[in-house]
Length: 88
Image (cartoon, rainbow, N blue to C red; front, side):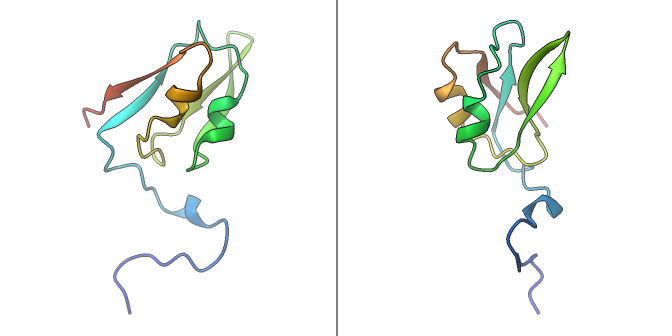
């Protein structure tokens, strides 16, 4: 028996927090976010969540699952996502 978790079925990756080893984290500048959802669409980990902040739809990464790849920052058309060093 393996000491590592085994993914036995599709969709159960949310049971395992996988974002603890990242070196960079995405930070959303909510004033710049236009709510287009491109970050959500392109995120390979499906860790981008839509939230309502000050009556405006924006997107933010769930850092428990984000691996810090930076794809979200690259695809953002208004550069509302910046990558910062993860200090945890």
